[in-house]
Image (cartoon, rainbow, N blue to C red; front, side, top):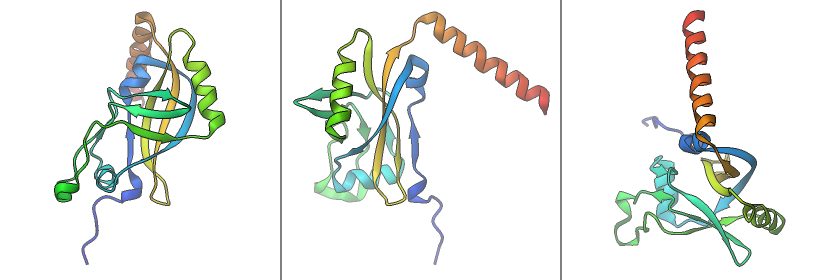
Length: 154
């Protein structure tokens, strides 16, 4: 029997742009309500978190603009790639996020998607505040310094 190249539980998709654009204040891990073809696409790693964001309506949390590519073998039962998906959080966490996100300049962004040991897809979301231009320049400078130090140590 042939061995698979990828372990389905090794999926760890990160939103690198979010860490560049925002300061993370608080992080939460949420489950996601998915269809069958969506979890199969996630296991293949066909997810894009770049433009996604979270909203709260009627004491329920949703993620919008999360792109999960269609599963090729799903035929007519395939899902819509950018549909709104419900997040599974406790009422206490939702109330905390709703209260904090009403503050000026705070938003809720997905940071990473991963699959647990039980095979469940989870989404790590963060309450975040947007960075100013000088903060971004400072981050780039630190990143370049770390690269230079790593080159010198080799």
